[in-house]
Length: 64
Image 1 (cartoon, rainbow, N blue to C red):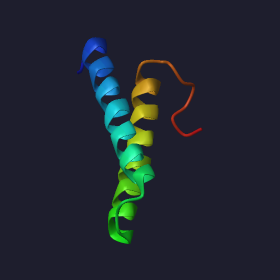
Image 2 (cartoon, rainbow, N blue to C red; image 1 turned 45 degrees about the horizontal axis):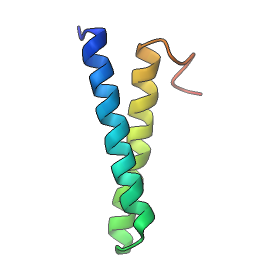
Image 3 (cartoon, rainbow, N blue to C red; image 1 turned 90 degrees about the horizontal axis):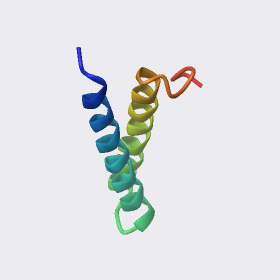
């Protein structure tokens, strides 16, 4: 089982990676398939962030 410290580190990394994908998507200097990849990864990382926050008891439910 991961410690709370390890989960906090993962959360920080996920938030940073989510921002990177959003910024790349927002730059609009790519083709359609690259745009879809950015949006797909950003959306997936939103779920990761929400789930890690749920594990840390910072949100009521990751499904909301």
